[in-house]
Every structure is written in C-alpha cells, then in structure tokens.
Image 1 (tube, one colour):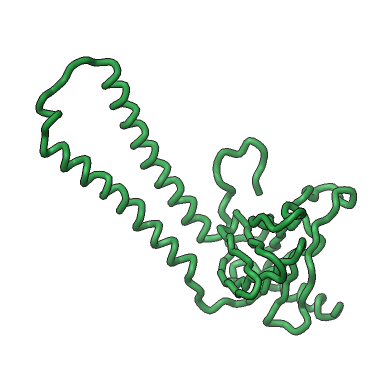
Image 2: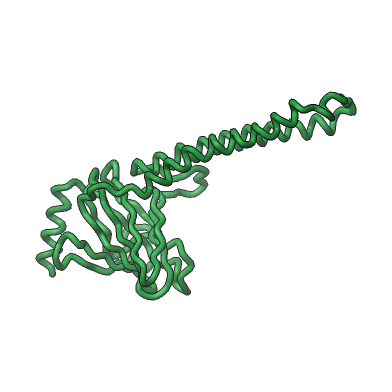
Length: 230
C-alpha cells in the first residue's frame, strides 16, 4: 500500500501492474528527454545573439521537427496499445467474483459457490485494532486464491462507483444496469487495499476495498467456513 512521502507507484502484485509500471517509466524517460532538450533550446536562444541564416530557412530542419514527433508518438503508442489489449484479455479464470457498489459499501458474490456472499463495510475509527488502517480496512475482506486468474464482475445498485485496487492495476467503473468485467492474477499472497474511485456521494471516501490473496488450500478452508455460516 502507499506510504507517506511516496514518490512512485505502489509495488506491483500482478503482472498487469508490472507492465503499467514499465510503461510509466518508459514514458517518463521520453518526457524527461524532451523537457531537457526544450530547456536547452530556450537557454541557448536567451543567452546568444548569434543567428544562422541556414537554420532560418532549412528544409532538413523542417523534416526533422515533423518526423521526430511522429516517431516519439509511435514509440509511446505501441506499448500503450499492448497493455490496453492485455487489460481486456480474459482467459479461463479459475474463479469469478461479483462486486456490487452501494451507497456506501461493497457487496461480494462468489458465483462459483452457492450462498457465498457478504457485504463489506468500512471499520469505524473507534473500532480499529492495532495494525488496521484508518479508512482502508473493511469488516469483510474479498478472499481470493493467489497465483490464480480471477475475474471480477463489477456493477452498482444506485449510483456510479469504481472498484479500484492500485497495487493490482485495476480500476473498473461500477455502473447501474451495466456489468463490467476485468481480470487479474496476484503474484504472491498478501493484503491489498483500494477505495471507490468515483465521486459517488457524501460517504464516497468511506468505501474501502480489501483484497486478501491466500494459498489455494487456505482459500478452500475459507469457502468451507463461509458455507457453514450460511
């Protein structure tokens, strides 16, 4: 999760987020190079009075400043399109979870199991225990098996919401009457935090998302306990 004074993105816990971080660094280096070059040109123009008439009317210079931006856009667009298609790729998910946004909490339904469904509310500040995070912890976590493709079906019951977990590289809008889907695979067990990323009302900032990735045998035990409680 994020921490104070953090400058970069959160550590990736899914292959998709790793690709997004690589693309971020790739684009940032191109932007840094362009900015440095433009700054150099500005300083050169301000600090010198020399003028070259060949530069003022040069076909070669015009070709360069027309072709070079096009090449830069291509270098940025190709990896961006690759990641865009990877985000829409859903191949044989091992488990499907339906996340429904309400004002102002999330409800989860495990469609592969009968009667495994629950609501996830934010834990009030006065009820937090040592080690829990204010405004980020929920009374029920979305438990999933680690190293397994998971499909998330996202919708809303009342207004627009957004199911977002930055460390997984996921941000999917929850629209009433519409069912959106995305997929992710966690690379390691852990607890990952997110929040509703759509301004959905007065308690918008109190819709935490907690995803807990556990080994497969622990996930099977958890589903068994949930079925027993149901």
